[in-house]
Image (cartoon, rainbow, N blue to C red; front, side, top):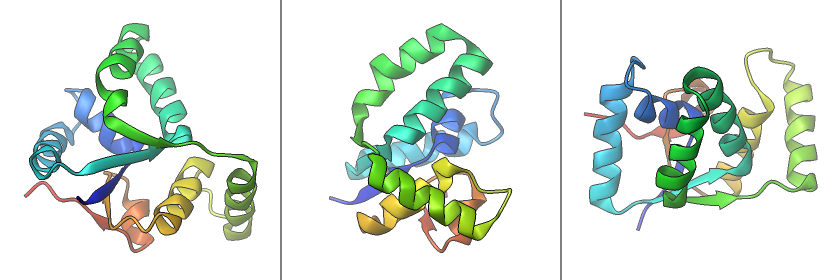
Length: 135
């Protein structure tokens, strides 16, 4: 079974019908379901997702995500060591375009030896990770 990392950008694209990447996200998700791929994410991605869903769509969207989609994800919980390493990496890079969530995701993907990423955030591709494509 393949293991795929799921980023906030993919979750939002999948759940928000007005998102420009929504049709592609639906196709990718269907392909991943057909492959029975294991979907992994981090607790930081979940926090970011809950915050953005709540802000953009309201608390019912947060509830719906928690009840219907979050159970499909294996969550890697971020502890102090990984948090500190990610923050150190972020500060070393000095990029305003990356977030702590991004860098934490990069470290987890590398450490977990995950081969594919479900994301619409180009930072993952820039880091050399292979994105799952819709077509």
